[in-house]
Length: 161
Figure 1 (cartoon, rainbow, N blue to C red):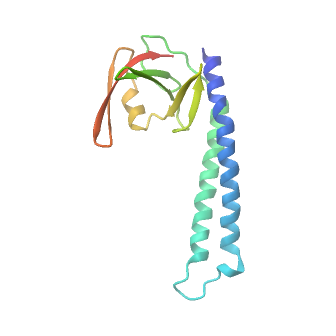
Figure 2: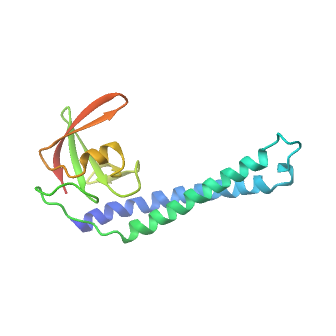
Figure 3: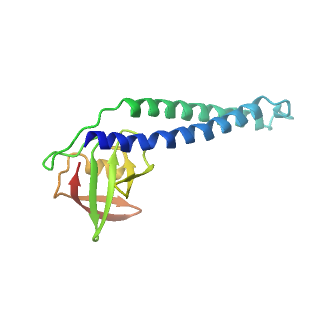
């Protein structure tokens, strides 16, 4: 099972690499805008160059986060979960809500990325996200309640891998 979950994690690698490429292009543009001769302030209220510099700094930080994320994912050990284990990081969790089944992969990073597991969509959630927090230490058979948009949603924990 952990080999199959590692394959699931490896689906994230090209997604993160794509995001890194896009971000690098954006960073290059913001850096160029910050240092371009036209970015020199025309008066004390002209902050174009300063704003471009702040944007480049934020993009540089995000790029570093993505690089760290990629390194962590490539070296992370996958844990196999038994039916009576409590949910934790690297768990693949099947939830049911109103008769509809969905899969969630709990990872320390990579929230929001969509993957595929045996033909089914899987959403990556972190333990810090509301759903991830609610799932931590739950077991098969438990009911999880999550407040989203002012509405409380209930999920049945069907399976943990």
